[in-house]
Length: 93
Image (cartoon, rainbow, N blue to C red; front, side):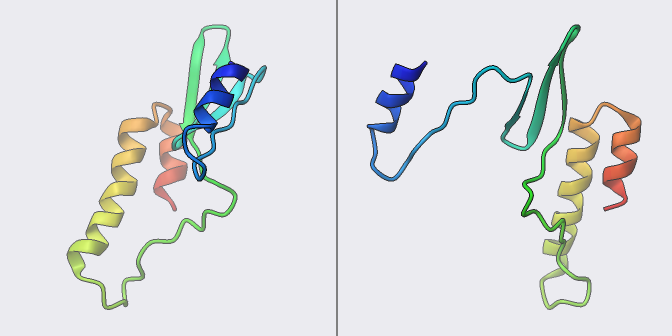
C-alpha cells in the first residue's frame, strides 16, 4: 500500500492522497464507516468546519435553489441513514 500511495502521489504535483491504516473507523466521502463483528455500520460524516447552514429564507436566492438545498438534506437522511433515531436527529438540523 505504501508503494501504491507513493506512485499515486507522484502522478500530479498538486494532488496528494493519504492512507489510514489499522483503524476500525474511517471517514469516506460523506460517510463515517465503522467495522464491527457483524459487518460495516455507517453514519453521515460532517467535517469539523461544517456549519450545517442552509440558504436563509429571507435571502434573494431563487426559491428553487432554496428548496433544492432542503430536499438534498432530506434525501440524504432518508436514503443513507438506516437508523430511525439518526434520521430524526438529522431532520432537526
